Length: 420
Image (tube, rainbow, N blue to C red):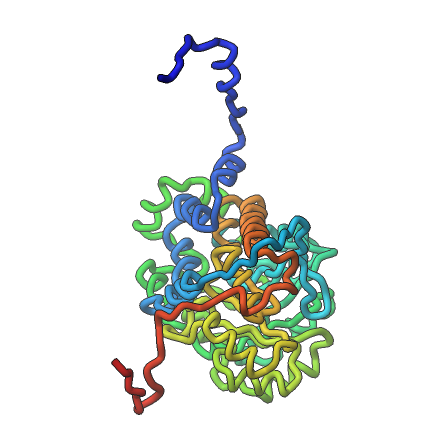
């Protein structure tokens, strides 16, 4: 029989410990976010549909993005036992300098559209966290202002080669003069991908008011207040504005870029140069043989060619062919610190986050970016401890198995028969 007694007031009061309420609404909603998916939910609630869909969406049927995210879910970790990791080292050396975490912030265009703090929030948060920040050619903050926001941190510049080559060359020279240490040459955007959400939303730069956007704005007055009371939204490095994203890209980009352009840019850039948008083994080998400082396996976040290769699936083959000492980086689909750990285990030297950072920005400005970085840091550290590793250098392919879901059955016109 259970022995019962009258409740004792002193014991009841010990249990009744109330947490002090957080009166700051921004802090309160960010503290409630435990994952990047939580930040996405907050961002969607607080951001007009056209701006949110521009960030969240991808090309055509959005299969490339969905598959990239699924690939990170389709893994199995293999933890070691009795290998305590009380002291963790999440830092890495990348492209001649340090990063406190094995990821940096990827280049994103039109960033002040998502939230008016834009690239300043991203660069400041990256500097505080000790990780690199990458400014896009299509950024809405100038090269010099990003440097001012992150004066002692690592700033990288992403470059498109445009029809007017001198514009691109001039931007590279400005970035070098401002002390940016790495140039990220993006090669997967000869023309714009078909971003259907943007077309359906009538999305343009700058945003145009319609009956639909006005109705959508009613429950989000804070976004429109910020938008209308801060400097005009425009490209900081380009003079062309007005039109849909696809129209702007098609007007600026040159589908004829080639290896000759890479040679010119290498000659004028004094720092490290990496190629972003590599999507097969052959190109990876050729670029490494040419002596570039690194390559980024990326399908542009699924925003260009739909049904493009999955970077995480491509990673082991590229590492095997170019050698584990080559600087191979990866982006697209990263939404959890475990995704980053798995990438490093399979040979990536570094990873880049785009949407994960923008969800934080939309959810709460710089504080939201800080929160996104903190969420990923906690997930990375927890995954490392559970695997029984103390540093990034201890991660090896033995720690991860990629599970089969999309299995190639053939190439071109000659299918490979499947037994059974």
